Image (tube, rainbow, N blue to C red; front, side, top):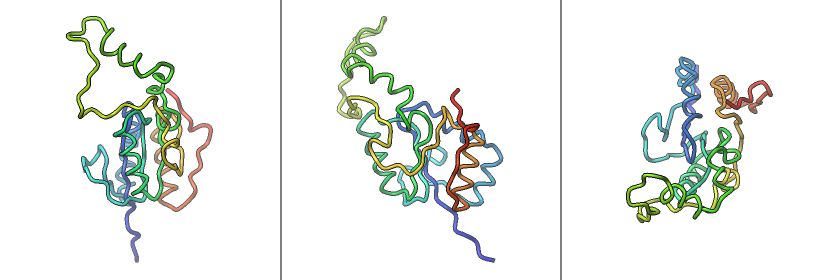
Length: 181
């Protein structure tokens, strides 16, 4: 009997709330079942800092700063299949609400006009990632192979999607699996 090598899976969160990662964890014991076929690489689940070449990369969150762009491009360069997971990755989601205002207006509202601020000023530490003019969906920065919609996608949707990828099938997402909480 020959065993297929495990697929390597990496995940990351850009500008988002980690809700997609939490939904992933909602698969509960089915994660153990998946671990017979996949192994995690860089991910908040592993705390591995360096991304190796992977079969599947799951991207949560929109792109709001230079660090997000770097991480996303690194995932694209190292992942055979790249998946935009959730509303923020697919269309910018809640972080993209700032797109209705200029970056300057957003920063002033957060750091200067907020009541009870001590020493109100816009942070300018050179170690802070450079903010982009707006929040972008990931497909506007790199090529995406699949979109897993939802806010967040349900655990059942994650499980079925990944199971189909593991089996080498083209993942199908039905209307009933689309969820926006």
